[in-house]
Image (cartoon, rainbow, N blue to C red; front, side):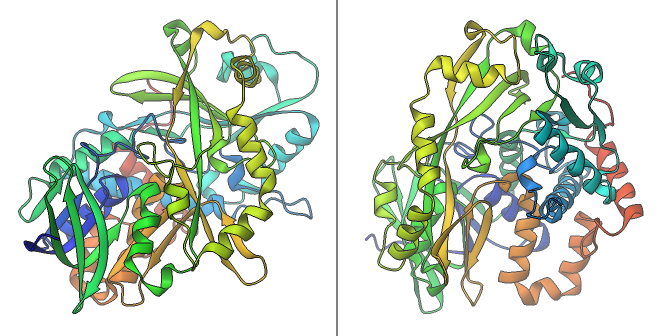
Length: 500
């Protein structure tokens, strides 16, 4: 190992939306902090944060049915949906603060208003959606949602979904005009563009973190410059591992006791991308359906309008797949290298309990083009194969953790794992991820910087950046209305969709 050592207050590993959000929060709260950011690829937001790789943009639980499961007694559990919807409002407040204070570029580069819709067919699914709508109406976060079982009404909302559809059997849809499309790749670049102009911040591309260990109260991060081959060490008081699928191996290298028992289950994905501009212009919504039995949340099918690099796009998918790579630009050995004595039992137990999921993912890999088209035609009956192109999506690593009863369980969601002393933290998991990044990082600040978070200085700044900080938007309807009006005005959002 090279002897040259540099020092920093904070090291962020991975140049995605999570590191960007945490870096910006910390620099706003304490401008004199020195921050070093290391990314093994040659640009920011090149993995999970990239618009083409992200399975869902603008997650706010308006349309994602997997966030509102039906319980055994037939009632709908809305707790997760309420939490995610509230978290997304927190994200919008932070983004509005950055825009209002000319810290990042105009909102048109990363956020657009667009209806979020759920669409189902068949008596069982229609009954579920009706109950879901009724349950969500009990919370003012979803009060603007509308519900319809009228095929003509739904056709007005999304003609592609209804044109050519067989009339047999009931259909239903919900529509929320307050939905948004967020390009997290563009947002990440905007934040880093600002951060790197500030004193004490360094962003290093083509730098891979080889090892992490703690000596004399400081973290020593061994880094390799992929272009020159040179290696050096950075000493830091605090380390955040926000490397997407690459977070787990680095967390395990840290050796903290809290990491023991954690494993990962990687899932790949693919999209169908529409290449027919006439078809693209006929659809303006994010339409989510029901997931296949045994499928991971990232594979919930949706016919999705996006704005990517200033152009309106239409995607369908994602189709999930089985992989042993933790990153799109990773190695087929990633899964095997992540197996340690401390996590082998949880990983084996989770594997045994999720054989149907593995079978489902392998079946997805073997899908023919005709089978993919059949899946698309369930949401767009008149789709033609020549109008769609298969694209590779990003990879996700679902969390496997110890469980006293099961030995190991597979969890769908995000989880922050941190040392007891708060000196290191890693973000594991996937959905809803990016959309709730601000709330996740606020929780991390409370956990890893508890004393500073209590100071009047930090409390005042946090409330300036996020007016609802310390309060519940799910319980305070008036505050929610004030927040939505403010963020809607600053981010140029409105209750009706607008063209790009």
